[in-house]
Length: 292
Image 1 (cartoon, rainbow, N blue to C red):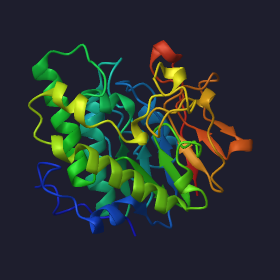
Image 2 (image 1 turned 180 degrees about the vertical axis):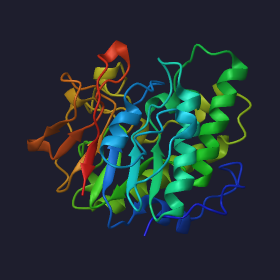
Image 3 (image 1 turned 45 degrees about the vertical axis):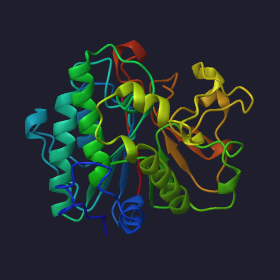
């Protein structure tokens, strides 16, 4: 059974406390249908419709993002974060995925977006080139998604963990031997606890200084971070070169574009790399990962 977020959407701020029960419900999706994982989009519509139509989620005849139609039944679609930046289509993608969420839930399916480091940018973890008004507008959209369960830090589905950048157990030894649901719940709990105090954003500087202290937000050395002593980033910043751990089950991640511009599988780490580099700066990649 897919998680239900209907009736929670009136909540407008993370400060209106998300309950432990809601975190538990949102963090694990149960379905007998397939789960489809769509990597980083970076404001790029190219080939997204074709990829989702090819695996049976979208009507192949409705390519306009304003009219995308869910035909996936009880399937689950997980977008792995970094919807924003680089390309010009982020607003279309955000609106289209929101409509697909409504359609999917009416049919026993689900659509969920994960938060990536580029979403964290708008919450103040690192600077943007937008003016203050534009920055604040995106931040409020991200916070609203987090407060309603439409955007998550991580999700467990079909025994797999989906998270933007991935898990290195040297950073999180407390997760050794834990299952995907436990990790997803802990990531979501820690993310929401970190940003709850800043849901009414008035000062991006204040958010930046007070929020991003949990190891889940660590920026590792390959991304210019200050945490070289542990040699790896947290779950929103871990670079493939810093090493994903074999968790005992599959983790499905984005963040680091694959060299092939296709989905790649690291068998020795039980890790699926689903950031195919869709934007031209990364190589115009395509493809999704499906778990049946």
